[in-house]
Amino acid sequence: MHHKSIGNGKSIKYKPGLSKTFGNIKKQVADCIEGNKTGKKKFLLAVSGGADSVLLAHVFHALKLKFAIAHVNYSLRGKESHADAVFVKNLAKKLGVDFYYKKINTKKAIQKGQSVQMAAREIRYAFFEEILQEEKIDYMVLAHHASDQVETVLLKLFRGCGIDGLTGMQEKNSNKLRPMLGVPHVEIKKAVKEMKIAYRTDSSNLTSHYKRNFLRNEVMPLLKKKWPGLEQTLLRNIENFKAVRKLLPEQSPVDFTKPFEINSDSLINDPVLRESFIKAASKQRFQLNALKKLVAKKTTESKSLKGVGGVLEFKNNRIVYRPNNHQDAHTPIEPELLLKKNNVTITGYDAGFIKSRSERISKSSIKGQLSLKKWETGTKMVPLGMNGSKKISDILAGHKLSVSQKKNVYVLWDEEKPLWLLGLRIDNRVKLTGNEKESEILNLRIV
Image (cartoon, rainbow, N blue to C red):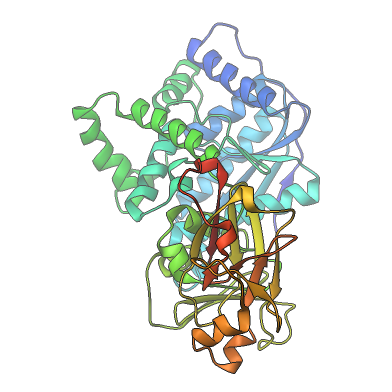
């Protein structure tokens, strides 16, 4: 349940040249809007009452953009929280825009394992999404700035993160827009002072109880004394990490629309693959902190995580995913083949006898499309190191596979011949000669 106040459409005027700092920030915001081609859209500004979001509201008003203001009262600071809400409501009235308001008892809404900040964040975004849908508003706009960006990346780094964590917040992410990510906080404070713009100060930000406040109030001032240009240096590094991230594959090693089963070692030993898995899993709304811990190291415990589309089970060094619409939990999961440039990734293959999870073969020896097939009686291949062919049934007998294990053996084929008896042997006809360039090699991997 939320409340809405209709704007009166009245306008305040800004004297040109009053603040050069305000003008610079206004230009940066305008460039963001234009660069993301969102100029003719409608925006919902998240306004807490602090200097950052209040300034952004004034900038949007000065740019004559179509926007509304939303505010959440978390009931964490008593009369101060109420005064913040009244202030923001009056600001919306002054700017002549619609105002959306929600009051909630955050402490009662906290779920097991959640922090106050995590609960408040979920409440906030759920409220904004509700307004976007009901009022047909295109984007929510957040007042995160350059100093927030630096703090976010450092906090993720301290907790432990992959390359995605080091790229920080994105200027545009789905329906979220952060047009002040390039603006240092000192510039924001300078602009509101020059423009004589009133704003509220959250007293909880002055304490160092929360980790972000501790970093902002205690750690960063000490670091800046030693390295005055630290913030700009870190911002440049964040841009460098973004450039590196673009070079990495986007494809996830798994498909959360289907059942799958993978070996957890493949994620533990490969940071890039692990990061791609976590990114795909985060869209399923699994408990992210628990997920990161489970895929980062081996565990003998059995755990399960529930997401919006299904359940992830961690057991015996395996990760199994069962979608909600997957009725029979005992139905075997068929392996799948994912081809990306020079890499073939095979998921869902857990035959219990795998000798090798990765191989490298010659691309020039491959004919046509690749496919996965169960082995068949009478099928032959030329095992690595041999000149003549041998029945696959004899190769399996040599590996002393049980009858039940043999039923689950798959073979990677091209259009003419078998290439890899999965996890056991490649075909001699696709072996490397040692003269191939890296671009002429196909990397095979079972995860």
